[in-house]
Image (cartoon, rainbow, N blue to C red; front, side):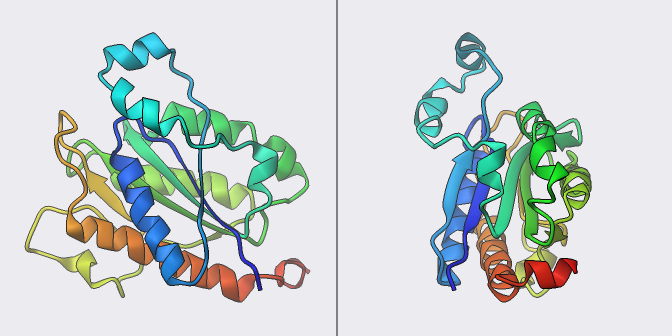
Length: 211
């Protein structure tokens, strides 16, 4: 059975984008082709340039922009966002706030939802960002999938590392100088595979689940 796995994210400097690539590998490990989308940008080009993000954004903005109606076509959606003061980025919040139409018809109910993130510091709100995003996904009736402790890198003591049972994550550093470690990328890849396999088992059973 064909299963559609969407990876929907926002990335300003490339850290979340790098994690999304690893999640894509995990989806492929499960035998499916991931579909990558970005949410609409809300910052003017001149602001992006002043923030030093233009070189990455020139590449990132080649990704297709998702619409709420397109979101409803997925069997599973893995959302990615940087952390902003312990919560999702405004770009992701604005996109999710526009999903009232598909919410009203239960278009995401019974589908798998998952989240990954990045933050500037080790305790910069990674877990709260993922958990607060879960609230929105639960309002849509989605079945939440995180990053289980069966990913052994979750308990590493060999390095400072992101990743929690709520989802894969990375630490970008105060100036964005640190990109995802091998362990963090492994966690993202595991999450992609895990979500895809759950979606495979649930595919075609949405009416049964919701009845």
